[in-house]
Length: 362
Image (cartoon, rainbow, N blue to C red; front, side):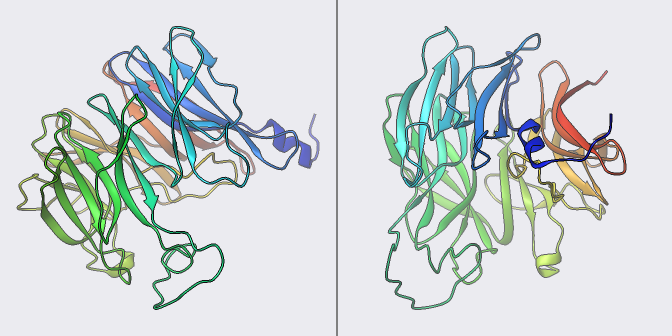
């Protein structure tokens, strides 16, 4: 029976996001968000799928961004122990043996882009003073939500171990806007913004995580994502050289960690990387994800009113993996060739459905 949509129907909407996977074990983890019964907030909890069964593993109603630790358990972020007005986020560990979740750390500056590499956790967090009352303004570097004007903090790279010990990896008069840690865990590639009036112009540095020595391999590009190749010989970047200003398409670029020639893997493709579609039933903005599979780099690309999954070869050529009239939000390619993806699909002229889906390539 057809009826009118009422405000209470918002409680029925489930938003799937924060997809994470262990490609070797086949385990998936993700966040499911819903409007709270009070209609004044959202409830978020972590779910896992092992290829056979789907189950909810947290019930704190403020748990999100899971990261799988192999067969041991998973890390997730939470605000379950924080009041509404307290800033920051907590890091929790949930073993897969049935034990209770335990809090590892509290990070007052918040956590962005949490990753696990070589047994350690890495993330970007804000540091510096927050001016709660009087504002002293010397210049006007206003770009996003008051950052640089109202907010005077910087964004830097941090590491965290299972004991709760936090280490600030980078420091200085710059912001870390993107990063990745090489598979061996000895080096990180970071994109930094140093000019407060031109934060879109970035440099890419290679940072030795043991000695803190660093060197630049790229400058005067706008970079939004970085991913090391599994053998550590290449870096895949999402960015552009701003030759058309802000209208320049983001492409997948290839460069060696020693520097040198920048290769555009999407040369001749008049499209941009990422999902810039908008939806009111999206759990969180889609990440700019890059995944290496052999000599291919997988990513999401805009194509008219759709966002599709494509891949680019290091030897040249771009091909569609999952297309159609849909907006792919996130994805992961498993070791056995299965591709799990979150998609918003148009099921009719006025209807939109979505969720977690899987395809298998032959």
